Amino acid sequence: SQQGEEDPQALSIQEGENATMNCSYKTSINNLQWYRQNSGRGLVHLILIRSNEREKHSGRLRVTLDTSKKSSSLLITASRAADTASYFCATDASSARQLTFGSGTQLTVLP
Amino acid sequence: DTAVSQTPKYLVTQMGNDKSIKCEQNLGHDTMYWYKQDSKKFLKIMFSYNNKELIINETVPNRFSPKSPDKAHLNLHINSLELGDSAVYFCASSLGLREQFFGPGTRLTVL
Image 1: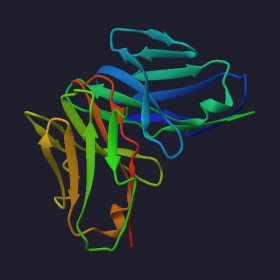
Image 2 (image 1 turned 30 degrees about the vertical axis):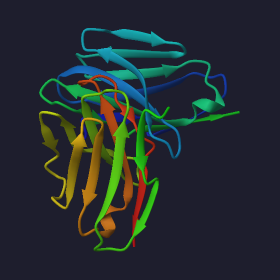
Image 3 (image 1 turned 180 degrees about the vertical axis):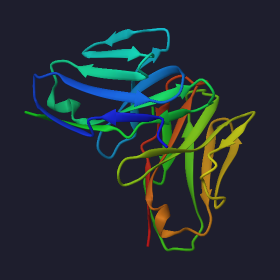
Image 4 (image 1 turned 90 degrees about the vertical axis):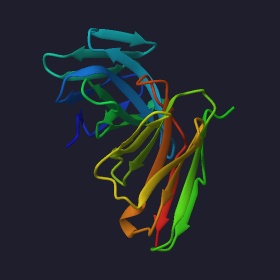
């Protein structure tokens, strides 16, 4: 079964709006990472948040982590058409030695 | 300079054939990975490998075998290809369990 599950599966917004994607996981983690995948390309790392952190920012990205609820959210502010992509969370579980990826959220930003 | 490269980008072959996909990273990373992404964009880890240890996802058929001639290369060899092997295969690398850098992917089509 998947360690990470993203919600929603698909999200369509207008340029300039904010986009929020959520990720839930099942086991204890060392860190949680978010990746972006443009169509036909490999994944690109966006941000890593450690299990003892609650919030992290990088440019227009804001990630939160709630270990008590085993969930994380990725907020993209002031979205652009170029943000259109699939977004994946990935967990580094405490007992594992590899990342487990979620099912992804397909974000479409309409110009 | 390409950080993680894969060849070929596209591979079309007949069922029953044996094929290899090559991966090279020039980042000096100690760990390399192979992932399979299906048509629903579900990303599944197949192998992770560093110079000390090979971790195999137990669901991967033994027709798939990773081969690492040196720390910068991790090739994927597939025997007796089946229709269900059609997918996009991604190579990735990392330093320990930090952020992973992905290759551009190899789209395998088995006819």
